[in-house]
Length: 62
Picture (cartoon, one colour):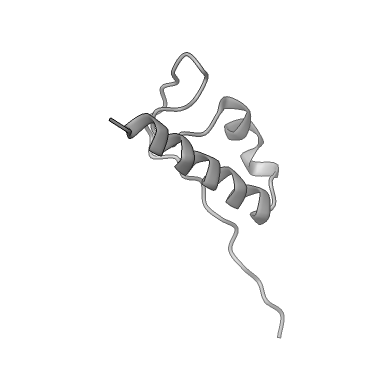
């Protein structure tokens, strides 16, 4: 049997606005990460999502 996995989906939530550092305020990806998303493999996408979570945590700290 062949394992056909579904690629990791984009974290886009449709809030497409960037801050001064070119980070999306909806998904916390950089503009470069957004542009590259379709060409990334699952490991690279997972790495981007980890970066997004780190950014989100930094933005929401008191």
